[in-house]
Image (cartoon, rainbow, N blue to C red; front, side, top):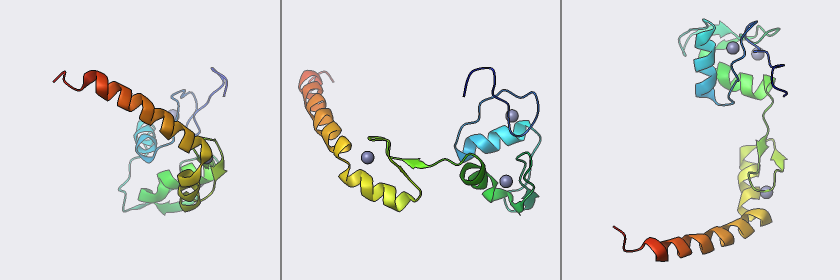
Length: 118
Ligand SMILES: [Zn+2]
Ligand SMILES: [Zn+2]
Ligand SMILES: [Zn+2]
């Protein structure tokens, strides 16, 4: 996404970047005047989509259907559609295991250094 070309999917002229978390999405929708009870029903505010659903599900719907965020292994970058599959992968991800060993070495080094500073 190049700078200056971003347009908000909820309204013209808005250049606030959209964070891919449900809390950030509800905050952003509030800016555009989409304020509903999470238990009530409302149409999806995404341009071109007017699917009606519980407002409490809208942010997740936007992330999954419109932003199409895939679950990504933070260590090797492989993407997975299901969290359970990703979690299983992350437990055995070789990149992760290498990192943990490196982290552990760094950590013990720091602990020795600061062990008696408090
Ligand atoms: Zn906006
Ligand atoms: Zn939608
Ligand atoms: Zn991985």
